[in-house]
Amino acid sequence: MQNHSINTAGQPAGCPTTTLRMKPKPGRVNLPPRPVRRGIFSRYAIGTLVLGLVPFLATAADNPSVPDTARLVTEWMPAPNFYPHYIADPLRPQSALTILWMADSDIPESGESRFGLRLGGRWGIVRWHPEGEPDRGWQIDFEGGYFGHFDMDHSLDNIGWDGLFGLYLSWLPREDLGFRTGIKHDSAHVGDEYAERTGRERIGYTRQEVVAGVNWRLTPKWQVYAEGGVGFDLDDFQDPGRVQAGIEYYGSRTFWKQRMTWYAALDLQSFQELDWHTMSTAQLGFLLPTGRGTSRFRLAIEVGTGRSALGEFSFHDETYVGVGWYYDF
Image (cartoon, rainbow, N blue to C red; front, side, top):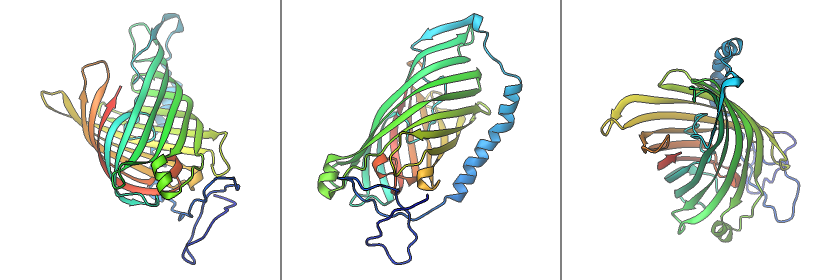
């Protein structure tokens, strides 16, 4: 970050720090300085995943399988997984109940155990696809939701919560390759109980982006994705850039009367406003279809490190291990 304006109160001499480029505003809290950690390995991993898509995308561009618009079928309220979910992405709307154990957290006066609540998901609005080929074509989706952290060491005080929504247009020229673009929004808040107990005031973290992403199913078992976002209407302490990439593996072995299978997923995200320090999230768990359309349950162990998922505390780092029940629809 450039042109830093920092508050170094209480910092050891010689400690390298960087903070928000924030203009003084009434009622705003000065955030503590944070060390500059570049996350070089994770950034190289993101770059490798993105570059690995280039040869295939070039081939697809030379031989596009574009649906014939004269034969397009319109389907209202289609299944919402036309463009695949980023299964380990902690910043997407989804429904889940989780328990988190914090190995390390920069959030002041927060406990070591938390209850996480997520409510929401993605809904298909309309799909246009070639007749007899519902897995190709275009689709418009809306997604929205809520997630919050509740401190189990302080009477389940709500530390903070975020409201998320987005509107996307997806295009699948073939079943194993998808693209999407759209707009996403994140409005973050400090929990009332946490603010009353600590005196922490809201900094007004709101982020809205224009995004573009690509998802490629390499084989029935392996899937990779990459996405970029450019923020707009940002506050003084924010920067526009964001990059994201991930990889997922779905096991072939089945359990429980051949209904359940296992999976592993890794999601990496970097934000310009955090000097491209990487947020890493990994999941290992089981998938169980509900029998109702494409919806499914997941039971997973999650490990995360880097930027806090809570927007109001995004300039604080956290490392945690969690277990959760998830519902994708």
